[in-house]
Length: 315
Image (cartoon, rainbow, N blue to C red):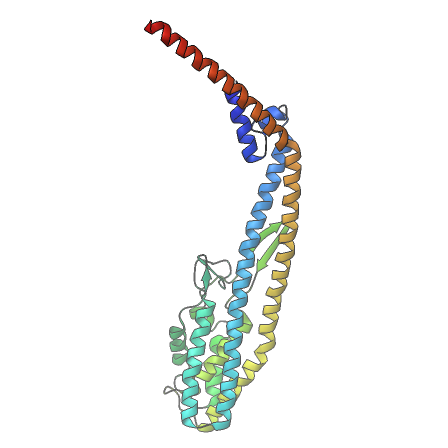
């Protein structure tokens, strides 16, 4: 009995709660079970919040990269528009190709095995690779002899029902990525790679890329028209990207507030649970020491008896 009590007290002193919960509560464990259930649910919400915050942070980083690429291309287009030499346009075309593919790669980012811009289809990249997309666009504009031909062909490719939807985009077309983060509270991520704001940037980058291409027969003035159109569309898309980033920023603020609330509730539950099964460290330590002393006395008595028995046997 003393050994069992010693072990029980030792466990209680280690964990901070009684070892025999049911006995301590005289069989009335419903309240404790409810506290544990609430705590488990809050821990799940906390995990969901962490995941949702990570998705938001990652999407924010990608949109930041897209915004930077867009700004860089706007500046390049402005410079080429002033120079308008074949060499400058050719250099612009190559730079725009690089930026286009970089944006596609950013949109195909994934974290912890989850693609960020595929909607509910998180196991699949939202877009095919950038090189393939550019080849598809090149096939669509082949033979264009004027700026309007090229611009209209690229517009059609990115519009509803065009090549972007039927060939390039591979993610979900409905539904949102959702995370339960509280009682009757769910956050949704509805930004996908087929969002109009993102399409518009990709389209403008494609225009810049094909301002100079062997598959078309454009005059110098036509190329200039394409460059101006690309620059105008990129400038027009600025506010849309800012709005997307602001929406994600609002989610990040919500997550921070929710996380603080959950931590507060978990702390209160811990206090409530401790009031039911917590131990008085001083009393437990005092009792543990007393039990250990009694055990030591018993061990010494038993050892003395064993030595006496051995001596009588040898005699």
